[in-house]
Length: 452
Image (cartoon, rainbow, N blue to C red):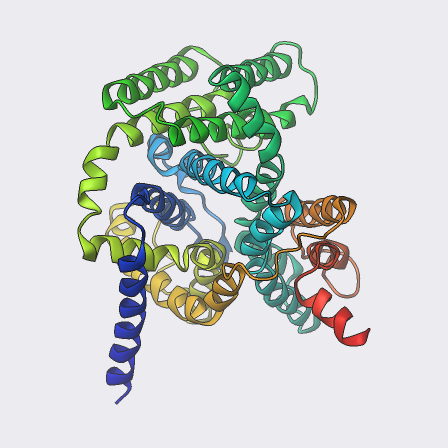
């Protein structure tokens, strides 16, 4: 009986996705949707692969595969695909902002729609992990374990803070693209180079954080270029890919940059936190290679079944991204409660690699119910209704700053605290909700409307 219900549910999901796939206008670039889904799924697989906890002397150790097996750091050149997501963002923003301008739409209406799609799915994640931290602390669970679990599960939110800031300045960056073309990209690249020079040569502290803007905005500009046909020639695109890969090889081989495109515990330099020109070179390489393959991929996506699969994944992609490490934590906790089953295997050993498919199956099994429960928040955010055209810009800016500060603080220091009665940094948890209320949506806003 339950199997029949499950099969019916699958058919319903597929049939809905197929219906949406059939409705896609013929001029839609399906490769954009494919790359969005591919980039997020690659991040999910990468996170599940590099996290390598194990038991030593009866205690769980948070192993990191890149530190245990240095050769695996080369794999990050393929799994660190956040540049692709920013490339896709630039393409999509170019189309949506241009359409908004043609309709004489407001900036507030345009941007609140994007905020809603990104923030609605993350608020339930905050609530769940706040409850876990409060409950775990009250039950006497070791605070270090609570903090480690919460910080691991909420790692994905750092990306949202950066992406929201990049999205917020689309009117400026798109205007720069229209006026200066590729010079707007080269200017940002030059800025990133100067920041790295100030960091590594002049040893200026903290200036490298400016590259969160220069690097990701530069990749975003390439998305504008893509939207206007700059990379339409596959040979030209491939030349960009080879050029980026060559630059990356030189930076890693003869520069100060590590091989890994994500942070490795114990390493003094990270290419991602904050980003360096090495990561920008990777973004250029990935852009060129991906867009050289576009004609082949678009022919592939003419197949209805493949396109339906892409539509299905995109309909829950942000939920998948936000909750995949929560699923990982759930599986690890279950393994620990069962006496550490599977965690006694040394990470990087033959037995460890042989067991990866089993662990991945468990992660997927834990993630699917979370997607079924929480995807509705992503789909509600994507509904497009209720964009605040009349929202004063000061409220939009204040709300955005609160949201981004909360997300960045969560990724940097965790919502869980080793001190205090509650074991939770309530000020960190509160900021995204306060920001959502300022902007005019989310639970806090709904509560305020009911009380008024």
